[in-house]
Every structure is written in structure tokens, then in C-alpha cells.
Length: 177
Image 1: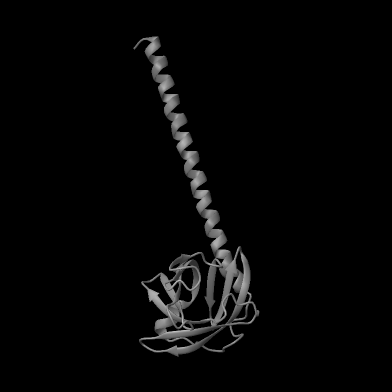
Image 2 (image 1 turned 60 degrees about the vertical axis):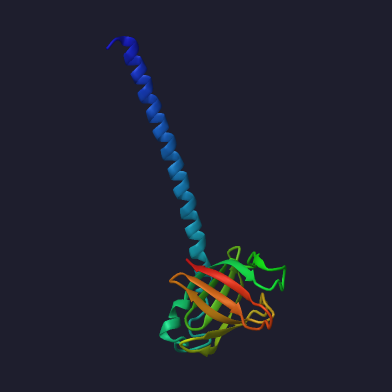
């Protein structure tokens, strides 16, 4: 190997190192973005954790099959099938998270701030139907009525149908975090 070819391979090696470092830096930046997102999500539940567990009830109000309602739910979208608000289709949600905690406590979070908290009243709870009333204690409810039919979609998705609308329905769609 002569001197010019050694220089060529040396430059190539430097080029590969630089390319590797560039990819490594991109990977670190990408991972840091996801870790920041997770910290923001976890803080939504922490905002509601300040409410005493026994504020409304001293014991469990849900049946075993409905215990999966507890947790932090990311509000994905509202589906309006009859066009009651803006024509049939998806509507952007008016808050970011719905947090449900023991016993019968809920909180709505928007931009990392609690915009509503309150008591969950069970209207009907059977093997075929689960209906709840979200009764605001902050008097700033985001809906005129908060009576909802709850429908679980798999292990990590939830639909809450507005029980007060006569023609058509509004469906709030959530994904568990």
C-alpha cells in the first residue's frame, strides 16, 4: 500500500466516524424528545393525586370488570355521527387527559393544568351496560351534561358516548397511557 492510498483510507475512516457520530447524536436527540413527552404525561396524573382518595366514597364503587377505568386516558378525538356540533366527523378534543382515580374521582387536564375535577356517580352498572355521571366539583364542566355510556375497546382504548343526546351521538375516544 503506497502513501496516497493510506491517506485515502484514513480519510474514509474519518468520514465513517463522522457519519456514525451524526447518527448517534440524532438518536440521542430523538430519545430525549420521547423522554420529555413521557414526563409531561406522568405529571397529568400527579395533578389529580392531590385529591384525597376518600373525598366522595370510602370504598370501591366499580365492579371488578370496570376497575380498568382507573388511570390516565389521553383524549384523542370526539366523533359526532349526526353533525350536531360541526357536521359528521372527528372534532378536536377540548382537553388533553381524563384521569380517573380511586374512589370515584376524575380530573380533566389541559396544557398541564387541572381544568375540572369531580365525583363519578354510577348511573347503571351491569354486565351489558356501564353508565356514569361526571359531576363537576369545580363548576366548570366542559359539557352541559356529563352522563356517559362507557365502552371499552380492547385493553387500552375507551369510548364514552354522550347519554343525553336523542338523535345521533357524541363519542369521546381515549387511549390509556
